[in-house]
Image 1 (cartoon, rainbow, N blue to C red):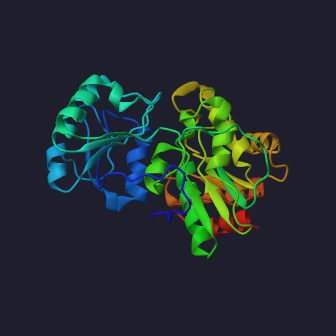
Image 2: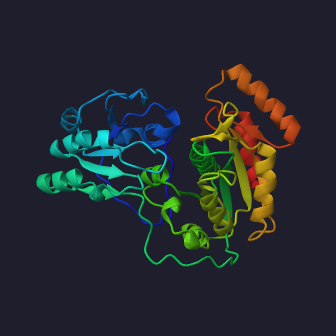
Length: 346
């Protein structure tokens, strides 16, 4: 599932391959960094490692840091994206163990690795690096709203962690497969690790969100497409500010709504019901018109990983008829996904 990379912002050269650290995670959605790397950059992943209480797996073999280093790993990647992006106290001894085994640590958390004293001390003692991915570039400008050349597609969602990154990667790959110049634009830590560059939008000061999105997707040739990874949801009580800044700054010509039909409430905020796909389409168009009056919905990407094939196909067919839009699961692919690609490019 590797996605070709093109022009990149904040290009990174990370120590590879990786030992994927799952912490004590019990919720699959919170392990999206590890799972994303396994799905889209499997050649960079050696094994997984966790602490007591972890029930999530990527399917890779379990190895200690010393075993992974002996197998060729050169960095431990924190493969968890938990609420608030914190490094739990019960992870620290395992992370120190990795540094002492000769591995650098790569983190996409909000918390800075160097702010954890035992990690900073162990890194210095073992001459190892602590690499924080969630670091935006310096001197981001404020948004201008200026219309830029080229074409842009943004994935938006009914919630966090339900397929915006996977959909963007799949669409970029499909565009490129048709001979269309297209770049995947990473806006989150996992996407940045996969693509080798990008801007972590949720680490940008809110006044500069739109400017960061403009920087992420600059002027391009008239036939070029930037496929931009969405963040959060316009309906998320905690993260909507990031979603709105990314929408205004990316000025998408087309957006694709991503949805998990098995999810009923906002992840981590269970008192809030998930918005409907219809609500997301309407709100995205109303807010997106501020910087691109021609914005349109290209279709729906359903994450049907929790459904069997027959149920998934029945659901997608029903939604196709109800919405009069293409509906597909990019991971299942097939004619439905090709129809979604056609609609986005139309």
